[in-house]
Picture: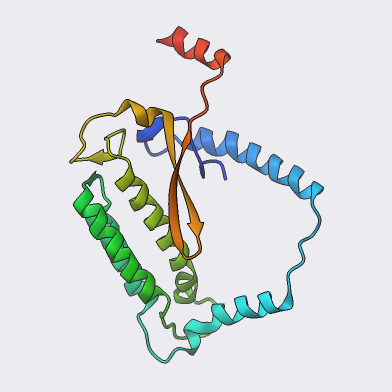
Amino acid sequence: AGEAAAGLHGANRLGGNSLSDLLVFGRRAGLAAAAHAKQVGTPNIADAQVDEATREMLEPFERGNGDSPYDVHRDLQETMQNYVGIFRSEEDLKQGLSEIQGLKERAAKVHVDGSRLFNPGWHLARDLKSLLTVSEAVALSALERKESRGAHSRIDFPQYDEQWSKLNNLISRDGEAMRLSHASITEMPDELKHIVEAKA
């Protein structure tokens, strides 16, 4: 929870620097979640929803054929490395998004062997949906952000663009598709500006 949405270290956070984020914001997120849970009742989930979720979870065992989840996962890793890596371009990002669409179709038809007892292949089959969702969101945001900043390097837009220091990309679900929008970044409070300016 601590580093899920933001961090203190900017666009090029080094490995290990996230410890402060994890501790501070993880605690804040946990306290906020606990306070929220005390204010809301237990949700009502219809039996039909439970049955549908169970059916969907067991489908990979029932398919007679289909890709292995390991093959789809490997191909997703290669796609992200090749097209959405450190150095990005519009052409590569569009190719990456096209590949991700194909991988989503394959992931929906994966087959797993074995039983439900300690079956990492089955776990991966379930994880693929989330992995593909995040991969698509990253590629869409990188395509939209026509500048270079921190670890986001667009070889077709190598310069820093001041307008992007005032905007965040937001990805939301629109049916089965993803919708990209922008939100203005909240201006830094005066008490924080004072600290930043004093250290400059």
